[in-house]
Length: 200
Image 1 (tube, helix red, strand yellow):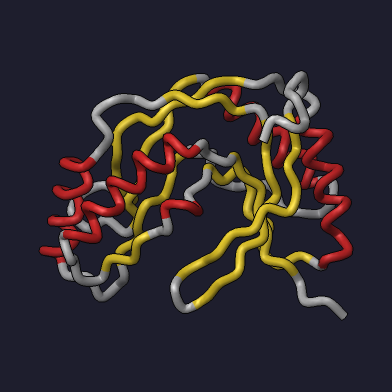
Image 2 (cartoon, one colour; image 1 turned 45 degrees about the vertical axis):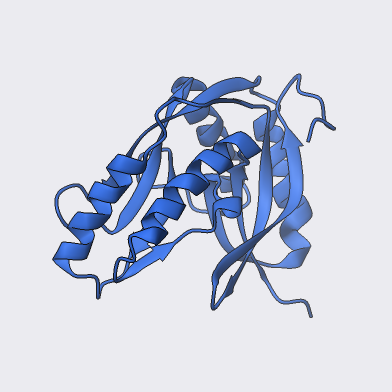
């Protein structure tokens, strides 16, 4: 019997955006802050729905649900927009880059994904969708000083220009947890309505 797959649906980012975010991550790494766990830049993505551990024999059904959601939406454009942290204040736990652009289309797509997967028994999201790109997390052991410095480095390192990118598909990913952090593998690419299926 195959092991369950830890899976999620997300929007992939183009190389130019990942490169800009990689420069921010590099600045955070260079600061040598205690308790800081960085995300691998090549794996940064915009999560639409985390599914958790799912049986391998449900992947096709999940893909079909993602296709039903994608068929209701045309491609749209987003961009990077600033940086921030959760929670706000002086004790951040998650450092992120923000998203701007056609957020109405993004939220509508996420809602369709959530609704389609609810039909398969996946619980609907209780929290409002808050689009962001996670760059790093602070461990509980991080000092107040390191948390404060992390915010300063993050703000100083943010991309100067808002990089735009087209969203023409969603993707189903497998997440494998390891000692060096999570490694992601795309299982399916699901084009939005009117997008070319072979565009990436």
